[in-house]
Length: 297
Image 1 (cartoon, rainbow, N blue to C red):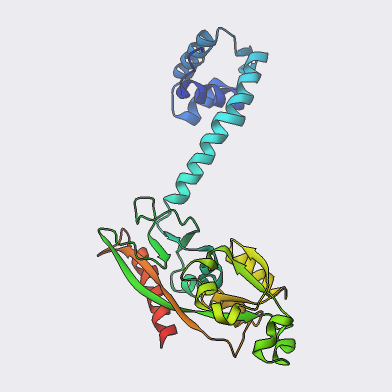
Image 2: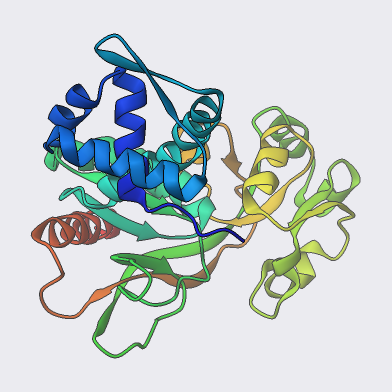
């Protein structure tokens, strides 16, 4: 494969082609006109093609020059500009990266963000649901929320939000259940479950006796789809209350009163031990810890 031209030569060529003048390209790039002329000559020699024709005091592109310009502008420079814009975003001094399960971000954290933004106006949050990110800072993670401690050197695991399993149903299904004794609920409604519910610490095991008579209507691998199905009236479900927090607060879901509740593993907020990489990370961490404390009181 032919050797690719250097980026310096392509930058000089693109400026001259776009501006129609070697002198204006030199001004834009803070070079001398002779330097631009030399770069163009080098590029033409390397490509074995004339790229410009002299027209009056300016220049215009040859057919080969037009082809090269389209390639440089539409591919090389646009890709570079996109990359630089992405880098610029991640250099924002207000950037804080939080990784957490999607349902907790949507159900509990999302409603807190307006208050958090009001306290820290310069904050730019990156909210990720990539639960494979299990290392603070190694993969650009500032704060990680899960139900398992990281137990990582240099990281502090804060036992943060308590949680519990609760039975929920939509408001439109509640009247028909209230009209019957609990032991007959299975005759009129089915269960909307998650695949993980069948693990030893899931509701299928914890509430085996209460749920034995219920027919499973649907099984999802995403709690957001489970909650959506229950909101639509497709069945009832046992869910973690924190993940259904916004649905419960807005009345889209109701907790069934005569069903047992069971404490679940608490949510853990993990951050670097000691001073974080930036003061704004500490502010976000402290806001979240305080919000958890307020809910516990």
